[in-house]
Length: 197
Image (cartoon, rainbow, N blue to C red):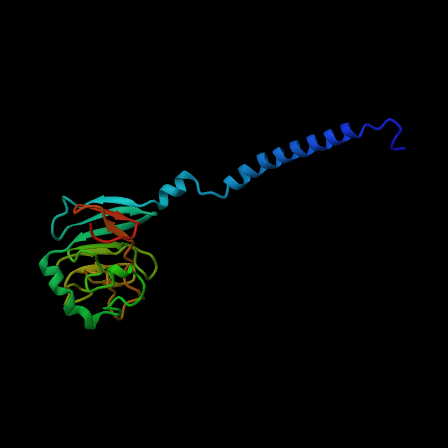
């Protein structure tokens, strides 16, 4: 029967053509499917580094920026604020910042690249509330020896001006220090590891 009018060249051509068309169809189906696995431009932007201009930031002043949907505080500490930090060590849960809540370059007494500038995520490590900035070194109802810092009114957690958590409060960890770097003396890039410019 193989010799009874069967054109094998046509059969090979049709088989090859069907294979090519099937392969092209598979590619057209696979491309959108694989593209759906990639993050959208909006998602990329939400996780992208954020620049913060600190040129107008005065001593004792704090600004807030958004990074990955979180509030990030940038505080310019004055000499009085910095000198109060070492005297609080005995009252703090993790004064040496041993727990990994900061990049290695910020694992120091000021938890910062530049001692005068603190960059911290403004979310309490207890239940995710946003603490209030209470910079004045004045007696407070929650601490008669208050030297300035952050107070979470939700459950009473307290943090010093380096974002280190006090003992005896619900928050278990220091405030998070996000990865950041200095592009220049007055520009901080939050979300990218580095150091000083």
